[in-house]
Image (cartoon, rainbow, N blue to C red; front, side):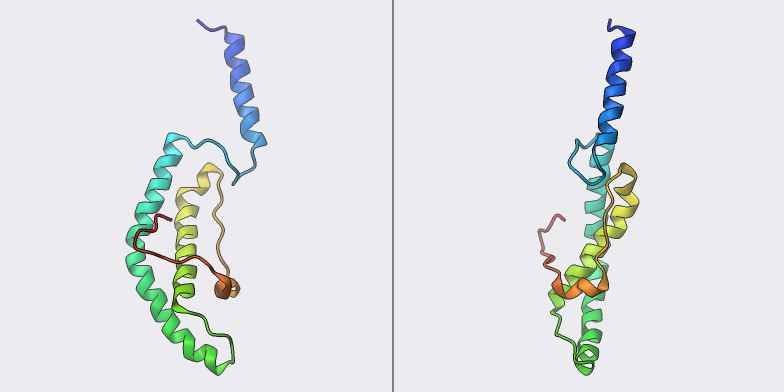
Length: 124
């Protein structure tokens, strides 16, 4: 049977290690957090059926408006990628943030520089 002092020492070391690792950086994923990541992928997969057509409609509306305002052309894949990144951020705020891993949003102003593309077999 382990000594009580060694158990308290191990708990203190674990607590100290958790506080040293900054949120968003690499650390072991627990079972509950792994389930949350799986749920993020599952919810995202379902919501993409709604988000992709809406993002395409947004692109259809944006194209003439951007042309009238003499703004640069943004491809539909960039608009859909921007919408997907923000979908991941919204779902991540609900499921992943409680584990100390914040998920950031992509601002509207950075839509033209988005490199993320949605594919049929894209897990995230």
